[in-house]
Length: 243
Image (cartoon, rainbow, N blue to C red; front, side, top):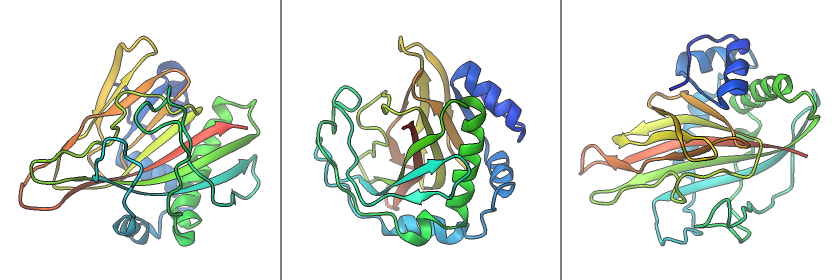
C-alpha cells in the first residue's frame, strides 16, 4: 500500500509519478486544503450530500446510488469556470455496465460547486497536476457527488462496473462521510490487473488520487454494520482530463 504521511507536495507528486496512485490521510488532506483557501464551509459542503437525487441510469436495476454532477474548465491560474450543464458520458470499454449513453444528472448546487471547500480542492489539484503534467495548460474537470446506500440484506456498490479506468488523466476521490458502513475497500491494480495496493477511506477527508492512464481502481461493496440503521458512504469524485 502506498501511504502519504507528509503534507509536502514533493512526496505526493513523487508517489504519483512512481506508483501512479496515492492515499492521503485526513490530517494531511486538511493541511493541504487549508494551505489553499481553507474549508470553512465544510459542514455545509458535507450536508449537501443529504440532498442528492437517485441515479436512475443503473443498468443493474440498483437503487443504491444517489448523485449530482457538474463540469468545469480549469486553465492555468485563471479562475475556474463552470461549464453549462452537460451529460456525463463514458464509453462501454470504460464502463461496461452504464457506458455508451449520455447520462444527465441533477446539477451540483452553485454554493457547493464554487464554495470555499471546492475552491481549495481545485487549487490543490491544479497545483499538484501542474508539477506532474507541466505540458497541460487546459483541463476539462468533472465533479461528482456520490452517496452509496446499504440496506438490510442489500449491499451498496460504489463501483458497480468493477475494476475500471474512467478514461481521464487523473481522479481524486475524497471521503465526505461514512455512516454505519462496513467494507468499502479501494483496490488499485496495474494495466495487467496485478494488485498494487489496497486501502479504505474511513475518515472524512481521507483521499485517493489515481493516474487513470496507468492504473485500474475499484471499491468493494459496502454493508450496514447495524442492520436496522441507515448506512451510507458519501464521496466526492473529481476527474481531470487534458483538453
